[in-house]
Length: 239
View 1: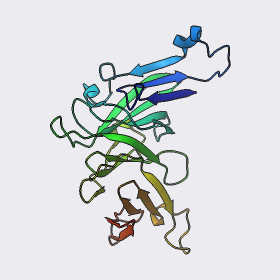
View 2 (view 1 turned 60 degrees about the vertical axis):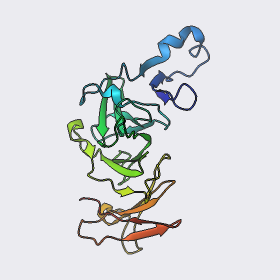
View 3 (view 1 turned 180 degrees about the vertical axis):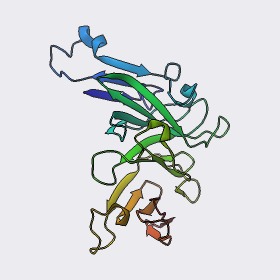
């Protein structure tokens, strides 16, 4: 069992660490044994990604809470936003597969927005399981430039994980989305069973805007959901 965190130095720190908390006993949790509990620590200088060279330039000050989820490749993973203040100024998420039988493998999925001159970044990454099988399908995240993104992790092959073309939504005046995205799904009417994935309606909410993402075929007409004075277009989730 692992405990993963970041933001060591006050309001955000440019590092992610993992501790082994499998044996939570007083004899194990001692200062003398502290070094044996450390699984790893990753900083911009030390982090390495399987799909991108020099990905450390994308790791900034981590504010969000890392999420541990099971993925379609059969592995467990730590998912977290790249943070603010990175050298590259990019916005993206890191996916770190973990397990007792293999060393952590890290992937970086970029939105290709932001630069050193116009910095961007993602604080919170919100994994979502759409069909109730306890396996993450997508990750939603908002960035400093007011974009709402979706990352597709539905493939069993890590090389196919990718950003869904977007953004899905942008705040009217580019207000930053710095909170976690809250997602919920349900049948749009009593006549459609919840067990039918493509018939469900999936909604996401953030601190600066709310968008409704109906889980239907692409031919479903676009709808608009209004809440809290903000109008956000609804999008069809690809089949």
